[in-house]
Length: 191
Image (cartoon, rainbow, N blue to C red; front, side, top):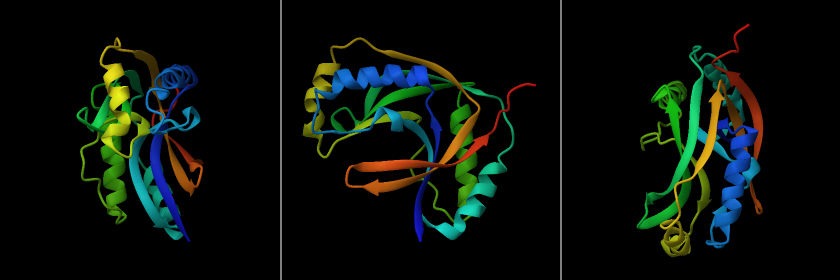
């Protein structure tokens, strides 16, 4: 049996609520998009993909072995499109981290550990973001892109991250369902 896995950082309540409110306001501008439910919003650190269930213990051990580091403060602001505003396929909210590049460094450590297990390295550089919607064609996002051009920049808040999660993604006709398999703390609370 194969499992479809990914490693991610979850959102805390206040940030999730602000992002969900924004998503509700803009969703009507692009109803053809495949919008991510607010409860499933996350920052993907590594998409592992489909892997044999027998590899799960090795993946868990590799992730549990990530050395302790400082907590990371994430600030959620602005939005954009991948691969570009002129060819929008993904609508996202930006994520900035402090210390600078700390989230990218954590993602790189996860990437290296998965690569040692034979899991292919992501070819694109890491870009921390929250995916709000995916579009089948750039035209599906045209109205959203045009409307947002006149909107002021938005701030969605900040949160401190001390852990990451291993998820299983189960594909269903209604969309993906994410099942938390493991919680890994990389920056414990001070005693």
